[in-house]
Structures are given as C-alpha cells and as structure tokens.
Amino acid sequence: MIEILTKYLVAISLIFAALLVWIFVQKLSRKVAVQHPEFGPAREEGGGCNSGGNCRCSNSNSCSKVS
Image: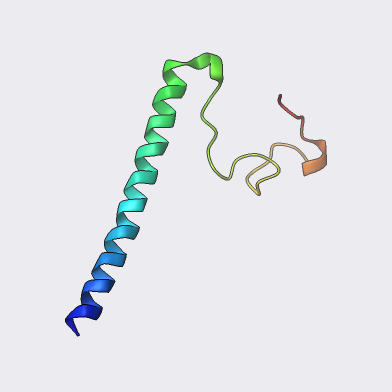
C-alpha cells in the first residue's frame, strides 16, 4: 500500500514541478522580450488565427501573415 502511495506522490510532484518550470519559462520569455524589443513581443500559446486563439479578422484565411 505504501508503494502505491509513494508512486502517486511522486507522479503528483513531477506534474507540479513541470507546471512550475513552464511558469518560469513564460516569465523568462517575457523578460527577454522586454529587454530585446527588436525581437518583438513574446508570443503566447493559443494566440493568433491558426492556433485556435482569438483572431482579429473575420476568418482565418483573411489574417495578414507576419514574417
């Protein structure tokens, strides 16, 4: 019984650690974007027309492509 509980606690800890690492990476990318404006703003996941995020155009085919 203790072995199963230990496996669950390890799995939960790893998931939580992965979440914390992801948050750290997002903060780091925003910091780099502020320090280097020539690279443009940090792109957030889920943003833009093709990734299913909010699009400021009528449909995904009419969005302007940024190169």
